[in-house]
Image 1 (cartoon, rainbow, N blue to C red):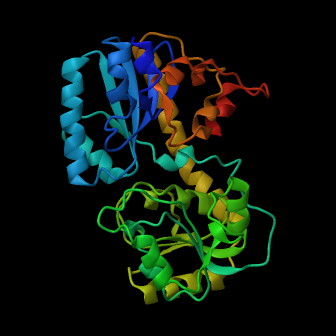
Image 2: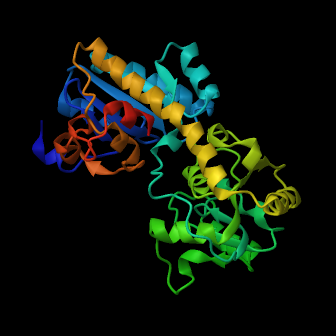
Image 3: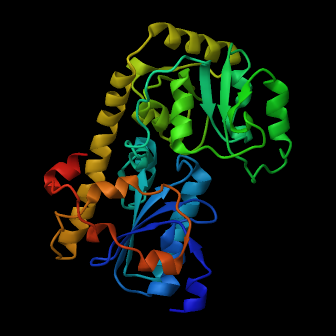
Length: 349
């Protein structure tokens, strides 16, 4: 391994196990196949397993076809490598199964840390709705224009293509909204506890993209006890939405505003919303742990029941690190639960 390159090349992923060698990683252009693309030259053609979460929906035929092409190239270079897609919904799963690409449903919402995103103490409500979404056109901020009171949480976005002025467009179309990240002056990113406090000050969370990935903010809303207004979409967020605590509105400002008013009027119990979200996520976590256990069986290695497997779901969803850092980090399988709880309980968390 070229140590200089290993300290320069960046990768999205985590080390799950050293024996057998298992990596998890996020995948998107230009990181198709996640760490499976990047690590080949560093680990060579040894048996390695790559569990891949798509960053953007693979209902998108272009990205799906690019995946298949890329996997074929990787198999030719590294025939001992194994790639398994972790799909956000049944439509993605069906795409991969049609071409015999290994895949399971393991919605990326499972990687949202339920200890950080929890129901905060009650606060006076500032907003009818809050939208945690980057200022990018696919987030469709225009659908917010009829909402009576609106809070916006956002981060800066560099890939705007020919819509470089989109953030200015948002400000022009939503002049009465509260831009939370700069409420105290210059723009700044918010810490998780700040985000949860602002969610507590809102009646409803918004999910207004028609196409993207699973949309992490959707799971965060639910775990913090907010009902959700969504629109028809591709990407996988519907997998964690419960009709009792969400409304799918037509993609018009009037319909979105009406859905916000309807959910606000229900005065739903935030703890029940959170419990319903966790109930949706548990089977996906279990399915992924069962897949990892299957890999251990196939490689004839004893599964480390005592490992802190819950930790896997609380690592960063979009990690950026060097190859050297990834290969040197403590594997999830090497960690141990600090509370002495048996592994059977850990798998249920």
